[in-house]
Length: 306
Image 1 (cartoon, rainbow, N blue to C red):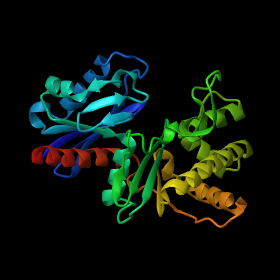
Image 2 (image 1 turned 120 degrees about the vertical axis):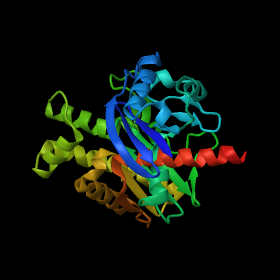
Image 3 (image 1 turned 180 degrees about the vertical axis):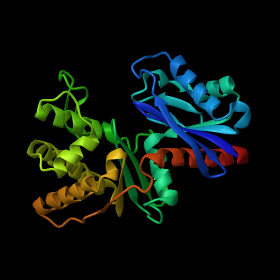
Image 4 (image 1 turned 135 degrees about the horizontal axis):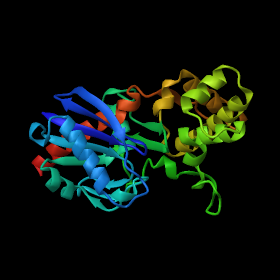
């Protein structure tokens, strides 16, 4: 079975061909303008990717990992997250256009599926994945199952807040955890502190390792902000392990500093509190692709049995 698998993010669409569980034909293309409400550029980009894989006649289906609130059974994208053109999108219409069965799932839940099935949450009854990038994706395993919640909002870490929202701020979504502590937020804060236009997560980590005091101060503040929300997550889910994902999780410095911030937070509490195990995701940037493929196989079996 050949399944085109796409991980649609705020800046790039990563893709691969899953050929009987083997990942081939990997690549990426820029994500069309996310502020537009016109879906045509996005669907054209999807069509271009399918052509690179030999065309629709050579494929058995398409698996999507995407941001937003997604009704997987009905194949409806209720809210598209950063992708404005996907709000209210009916994936069944995409199936008609391309002539292929399609399945779509929230990106963070895909990441959790991958880590739970074959990664660093394997064998864990209660665990969490936090993926840092443009925002912060989240996925939770509760009692051995991916937890979605009553309104499909479980794991929407980007929507968590560290303080009261400020709609009048020049910073979009000021007060949210993603604005403060995503990789994008880290880079914005470091660039502001250093008086430069922009920087990357890789540059920030390099500066911290080189002893840059400004970058190190902001980096520590961000890790403290992550530790604060890890504590809050512990209070509700009590996970035995938390996996950190996204490109920045490839940096051992990031993993170590979040662990250190978690210990600092616990040390300030007036009572004993468990230190959750914090590790990097096994699949890093491929987790969403692997999880989307697993979701496709699961949903095809579920639909066949219905």
